[in-house]
Length: 172
Image 1: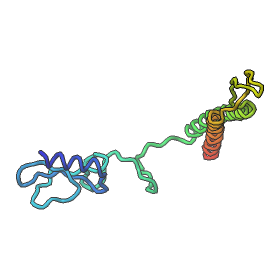
Image 2: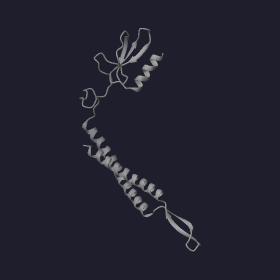
Image 3: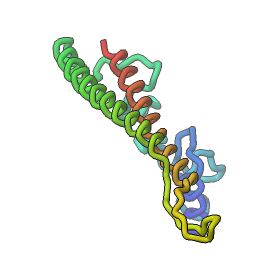
Image 4: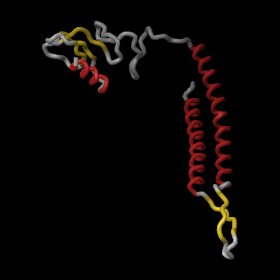
């Protein structure tokens, strides 16, 4: 049982590039591994995605990998349907882009207002003549933290705009 637990923990910790097989060792224990076991009976094999191996070595119901041609039986849509989908997608992305541009304007305005309104507080100290005097002081740490958050917000909207523009450029 300890061997089985160890093998399962190993398989979960280190994803195997090869197919995993189920073996029965000489003592009758079931072992899952991607390394052939000498003296053990191979019961079955399956791919990394858990699908059983076909006789020809391929996997069932598998999406094509990047760079591989699409199988002939892979579902397709006609050009008109795809154009409608692209048009809908473009419209949604353009609406999101407008929203992000407005949000960026607001973030820049908030940043400018934040710069103009430093973190200040009033305190009372003893003046030169010994009488209490109210002075205004700046809390630089709070000001810097506020400005960092405002700048992060501006940066976020700028990044979102760039990504949306990139998405829009990719639509045919």
